[in-house]
Structure formats: structure tokens, C-alpha cells
Length: 259
Ligand SMILES: Nc1nc2c(c(=O)[nH]1)N[C@H]1C(S)=C(S)[C@@H](COP(=O)(O)O)O[C@H]1N2
Ligand SMILES: [Mo]
Image (tube, rainbow, N blue to C red; front, side, top):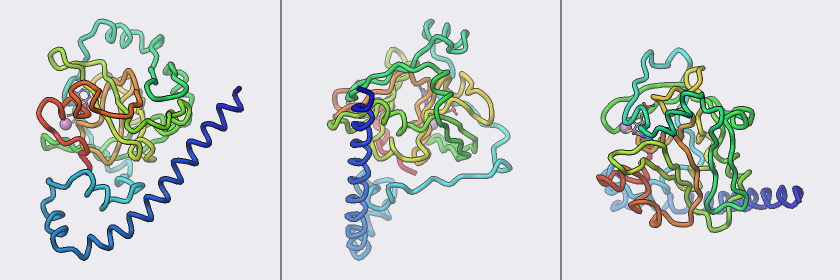
């Protein structure tokens, strides 16, 4: 049984790397053509109007966001948005340091999981010092430690119809829960982690305890704090307002939000 599970996981990974290799080949050809086309040059100059497709064409899929040295870390990293989910259930878990809390991993996966923080902290980790950019006009450099999301998804064995990963959060604005989503390219990117540590300490409630997404090529609002549930879905249109995230639904923020 466990052998079957392992080989299914491997097949999925092989499939993903096969897709990655195929996509990379396509990318080069498309880029060569794009560079020669004045109309596309004009489109690129428009900056904010870049479409998701155009951004994918000009960004190598595995390109890393810049990483910094410890000396470059911001002395103060402010909190923003919600800093304490109002739900009594969340607050009870926070008071108990999330000892009995479980991360839910479900949706389009063959092996749904519920994981404790002890299990998550014992798994392989990645640490990265990166710059957070908020659309409200501030940035900060911090160090993040967490579980690579790709590893988690490999364990959960994505179904072949899975296309997006949705992060459901504990907090709300009014009665609307915060959520965010990314595609599988970003989900398997090496700098995409579910962070449980920040600047060498346990992630604080203000910054999104027990787990917050770090996807370092994305703007701040994509980086969901207080992640309770990771759900794989074939289509974003069935999730909440249908645009892939709280701010996307509420005021039309861009879903791709690449930096
Ligand atoms: N669950 C949740 N995640 C969230 C937010 C929020 O209000 N709720 N705000 C977003 C925004 S706009 C930013 S800039 C960052 C702020 O992260 P920080 O509090 O660690 O600085 O979290 C993002 N993730
Ligand atoms: Mo933000």
C-alpha cells in the first residue's frame, strides 16, 4: 500500500517536471518572437497592464526572488491587514500555542491530510531572507523559515485535475473570510513555503501564526496569514467570489500580482 502511494507520488513529480521541461522549450521560442515585436514591446512598457500570460512569458518559471544577507534585514517589520483573527476558536488555539491545532490539506488530492505543528516543524524546512512589498507603499526585509509547499503537495498527491492551490485563513473582513490562491508553478517554486518561523523566532500572531504563505515573487496581499486549510482545486471560479482571493473579489486587485 505505502509502496503504491510512493510510486504515485513519484509519477506526479515526473509528470510535473516533464511539463516544466516542455514549458521551458516553448518559453524560449515565444520570447524570441516577442522581443522582435514592437506591439509587444509597447505592451511590456505598460507595466501594470501586463496580463498573467504575458508575465509568465517574460518570467522564467523557476526564477528566484532576490535573497538578502542577515545584515540587510529591516530592524522593524510592521504588521498589516488583520493582526488577530476574531474567532474564539482561533484565539483558543493561539493561547495554547497551536498544540492541538491541525492544518487541513484537502480538495483535489488523493491523500487528504491533517498535520500538527510538531509534524510540520519536523519536516524539511527552507529559510530565506527576502523583501516583502505591500501595494500600500511599504517594504521590509525579513527572514522566513517554513515547510516547502511543493513537499506538502507531493505528500498529499495532487489529483491530475488540480490546477490551483487555495489558502483559507482564520480571519475575516466583515463576515468574509480572507483567502488567497496561486497556480501550480508558484506552488512548486522553491521559495514558496508555509512559514512557521520569522527572524529566527516562532511566527507571531500578528505576522500570521501558526502558518503564513511566503511566495516571494508575489505582492504582500497574496501572502496569506493564519492559514488553516490548503485546498487544491481544478478551478477558482467555484471558490468564494470566484476571483482567487479576498482583495481580488472585493476591489479588483490583480490575481497574478507578480513582482
Ligand atoms: N489572512 C490574512 N492574510 C493577509 C492579510 C490579511 O489581512 N489577512 N493582509 C495581507 C497584506 S495586504 C499584507 S501587506 C501582508 C502583511 O503581512 P505582515 O502583517 O506580516 O506584515 O499580509 C497579507 N496577508
Ligand atoms: Mo499589503
